[in-house]
Image: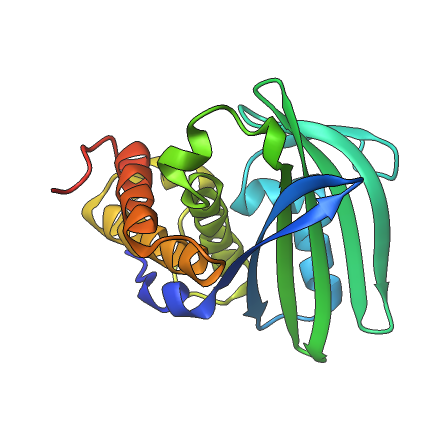
Length: 221
């Protein structure tokens, strides 16, 4: 079994609101440093064969202007793609799911020859978020999902010891260890929400609702 406790503190999480084309946009950022060179992290996060090892099977054209589809999840268009050069790399895609469109940007920065910082930004127009969703769940609704994905990436890149295949991930998420991890990261997203200006009690209620959503349990009393 994999001990994911170190992962909770290894990941950074933040939330901010900015204007995008004149519209208020919430931007969630999650990041982690991995013991792997930037070329390896780039390959792990941009090639179909490697993405399937830690996240989900993906089909389509993963080049600039191409369209992709994650099995059972989002699809979209590759909007920009800058391979590693001078210690940095970046790509940006649309994230189209359930009839809505948001945006994901991944940035890589070489820390040393053998370590790389991965940072993912997920941006959504405030007006496009379904009514009541943010008020109920806050940033944890999407944030916990990204935390779970980064567990897979950490295992793939040597940031964690052990192995959980994507096929085993759903069962693990509903195990006692998986639920404890979800509880912890839901609370960390609540802390990020408070740091961005949210009321502490409301953020705690959001974290409870998020935990219940991901684990199929009623919020804790």
